[in-house]
Amino acid sequence: MKKIWILSCLAVCLFPQFAEAQTDREPIRVGVHGLTHDHVHGLLRQIDKGEIRLVGIAEPNQELAKRYAKKYGIEESLLYTENKYELESRNSTSADIKGVKLADRPYPYQDPIAYLAAVLRGNVKPEKNNLSSLENNRIVVEILAAAIESARTGETVVLSK
Image 1 (cartoon, helix red, strand yellow):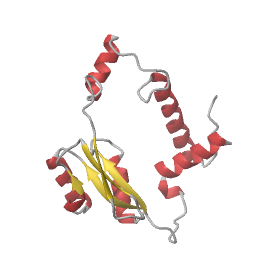
Image 2 (cartoon, rainbow, N blue to C red):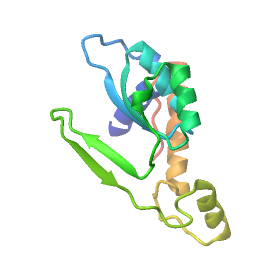
Image 3 (spheres, rainbow, N blue to C red):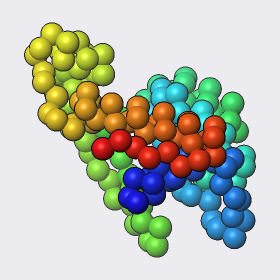
Protein backbone atom coordinates (compact mmCIF):
# COMPACT_ATOMS: atom_id res chain seq x y z
CA MET A 1 0.00 0.00 0.00
CA LYS A 2 2.88 2.33 0.85
CA LYS A 3 4.37 1.84 -2.63
CA ILE A 4 1.09 2.72 -4.31
CA TRP A 5 0.79 5.89 -2.19
CA ILE A 6 4.37 6.92 -3.05
CA LEU A 7 3.80 6.18 -6.73
CA SER A 8 0.56 8.19 -6.70
CA CYS A 9 2.33 11.17 -5.09
CA LEU A 10 5.16 10.93 -7.60
CA ALA A 11 2.75 10.73 -10.53
CA VAL A 12 0.86 13.81 -9.31
CA CYS A 13 4.15 15.70 -8.91
CA LEU A 14 5.48 14.66 -12.31
CA PHE A 15 2.17 14.95 -14.14
CA PRO A 16 0.11 17.63 -12.40
CA GLN A 17 -2.38 17.72 -15.28
CA PHE A 18 -3.80 14.41 -13.93
CA ALA A 19 -4.57 15.89 -10.52
CA GLU A 20 -7.81 17.77 -9.97
CA ALA A 21 -7.35 21.50 -9.47
CA GLN A 22 -7.92 22.53 -5.89
CA THR A 23 -8.67 26.22 -5.95
CA ASP A 24 -9.36 26.40 -2.21
CA ARG A 25 -5.72 25.68 -1.30
CA GLU A 26 -2.83 28.06 -1.14
CA PRO A 27 -0.04 27.49 -3.69
CA ILE A 28 2.92 25.45 -2.47
CA ARG A 29 5.81 27.70 -1.44
CA VAL A 30 8.95 26.63 -3.27
CA GLY A 31 12.58 27.69 -3.11
CA VAL A 32 14.89 26.57 -5.91
CA HIS A 33 18.55 25.79 -5.32
CA GLY A 34 20.39 25.80 -8.63
CA LEU A 35 18.96 26.26 -12.10
CA THR A 36 21.03 23.67 -13.94
CA HIS A 37 18.56 20.80 -13.39
CA ASP A 38 16.30 19.76 -16.29
CA HIS A 39 13.21 19.54 -14.07
CA VAL A 40 13.50 23.22 -13.08
CA HIS A 41 11.69 24.27 -16.27
CA GLY A 42 8.61 22.20 -15.42
CA LEU A 43 8.59 23.58 -11.90
CA LEU A 44 8.91 27.21 -12.99
CA ARG A 45 6.11 26.78 -15.54
CA GLN A 46 3.79 26.03 -12.60
CA ILE A 47 4.14 29.64 -11.37
CA ASP A 48 1.74 30.98 -14.01
CA LYS A 49 -0.74 28.20 -13.26
CA GLY A 50 -0.89 29.21 -9.58
CA GLU A 51 0.32 25.79 -8.44
CA ILE A 52 3.39 27.17 -6.68
CA ARG A 53 4.54 30.40 -5.09
CA LEU A 54 8.23 30.98 -5.68
CA VAL A 55 9.95 32.33 -2.57
CA GLY A 56 13.51 32.45 -3.93
CA ILE A 57 16.14 31.07 -6.26
CA ALA A 58 19.72 30.46 -5.13
CA GLU A 59 21.97 30.39 -8.20
CA PRO A 60 25.58 31.61 -8.16
CA ASN A 61 25.59 32.20 -11.95
CA GLN A 62 24.06 35.70 -12.15
CA GLU A 63 23.69 35.64 -15.94
CA LEU A 64 21.76 32.36 -15.82
CA ALA A 65 19.56 33.55 -12.94
CA LYS A 66 18.65 36.76 -14.78
CA ARG A 67 17.91 34.86 -17.99
CA TYR A 68 15.49 32.54 -16.15
CA ALA A 69 13.92 35.50 -14.34
CA LYS A 70 13.19 37.16 -17.68
CA LYS A 71 11.92 33.93 -19.29
CA TYR A 72 9.53 33.05 -16.45
CA GLY A 73 8.59 36.57 -15.28
CA ILE A 74 10.33 36.21 -11.91
CA GLU A 75 11.09 39.31 -9.86
CA GLU A 76 14.85 39.84 -9.56
CA SER A 77 14.40 40.43 -5.82
CA LEU A 78 13.84 36.66 -5.54
CA LEU A 79 17.29 35.86 -6.98
CA TYR A 80 20.09 35.10 -4.56
CA THR A 81 23.34 35.01 -6.51
CA GLU A 82 25.94 36.56 -4.25
CA ASN A 83 27.22 33.62 -2.23
CA LYS A 84 26.37 29.97 -2.74
CA TYR A 85 27.47 29.17 0.82
CA GLU A 86 25.03 31.42 2.68
CA LEU A 87 21.42 30.42 3.15
CA GLU A 88 18.59 32.19 4.92
CA SER A 89 15.58 30.43 6.37
CA ARG A 90 12.35 31.87 7.63
CA ASN A 91 9.43 30.19 9.38
CA SER A 92 6.05 30.92 7.79
CA THR A 93 4.68 32.06 11.16
CA SER A 94 7.53 34.44 12.01
CA ALA A 95 9.42 37.29 10.38
CA ASP A 96 12.71 36.16 11.97
CA ILE A 97 15.41 35.22 9.48
CA LYS A 98 18.04 32.65 10.41
CA GLY A 99 21.35 32.67 8.55
CA VAL A 100 23.30 29.49 7.86
CA LYS A 101 26.82 29.34 6.44
CA LEU A 102 27.78 26.20 4.59
CA ALA A 103 31.30 24.86 4.46
CA ASP A 104 32.90 24.08 1.13
CA ARG A 105 32.67 20.37 0.36
CA PRO A 106 35.98 18.55 -0.03
CA TYR A 107 37.18 17.25 -3.38
CA PRO A 108 35.62 15.41 -5.23
CA TYR A 109 32.21 15.94 -3.56
CA GLN A 110 31.85 19.60 -4.57
CA ASP A 111 31.56 18.81 -8.27
CA PRO A 112 29.36 16.06 -9.77
CA ILE A 113 31.76 15.41 -12.67
CA ALA A 114 34.77 15.11 -10.34
CA TYR A 115 32.71 12.81 -8.10
CA LEU A 116 31.74 10.60 -11.04
CA ALA A 117 35.37 10.44 -12.19
CA ALA A 118 36.49 9.47 -8.66
CA VAL A 119 33.88 6.69 -8.54
CA LEU A 120 34.88 5.39 -11.98
CA ARG A 121 38.56 5.41 -10.97
CA GLY A 122 37.75 3.54 -7.76
CA ASN A 123 38.89 6.40 -5.51
CA VAL A 124 35.40 6.76 -3.98
CA LYS A 125 32.92 3.97 -3.29
CA PRO A 126 29.38 5.24 -2.69
CA GLU A 127 27.74 3.64 0.35
CA LYS A 128 24.78 1.36 -0.33
CA ASN A 129 21.58 3.43 -0.79
CA ASN A 130 23.57 6.68 -0.86
CA LEU A 131 21.85 9.24 -3.12
CA SER A 132 24.56 8.64 -5.74
CA SER A 133 24.66 4.85 -5.40
CA LEU A 134 23.75 2.53 -8.25
CA GLU A 135 21.15 0.81 -6.03
CA ASN A 136 19.38 4.10 -5.29
CA ASN A 137 19.45 5.25 -8.91
CA ARG A 138 18.01 1.93 -10.11
CA ILE A 139 15.08 2.46 -7.72
CA VAL A 140 14.61 6.02 -9.00
CA VAL A 141 14.56 4.83 -12.62
CA GLU A 142 12.05 2.09 -11.73
CA ILE A 143 9.77 4.63 -10.00
CA LEU A 144 9.97 7.05 -12.93
CA ALA A 145 9.26 4.29 -15.46
CA ALA A 146 6.27 3.14 -13.39
CA ALA A 147 4.97 6.73 -13.12
CA ILE A 148 5.18 7.15 -16.89
CA GLU A 149 3.45 3.81 -17.48
CA SER A 150 0.73 4.67 -14.95
CA ALA A 151 0.15 8.06 -16.58
CA ARG A 152 0.03 6.45 -20.04
CA THR A 153 -2.42 3.68 -19.10
CA GLY A 154 -4.33 5.27 -16.23
CA GLU A 155 -3.69 2.11 -14.21
CA THR A 156 -1.83 1.54 -10.95
CA VAL A 157 1.65 0.11 -11.48
CA VAL A 158 2.98 -2.04 -8.66
CA LEU A 159 6.73 -1.85 -8.15
CA SER A 160 8.81 -4.99 -7.73
CA LYS A 161 10.30 -5.69 -4.31
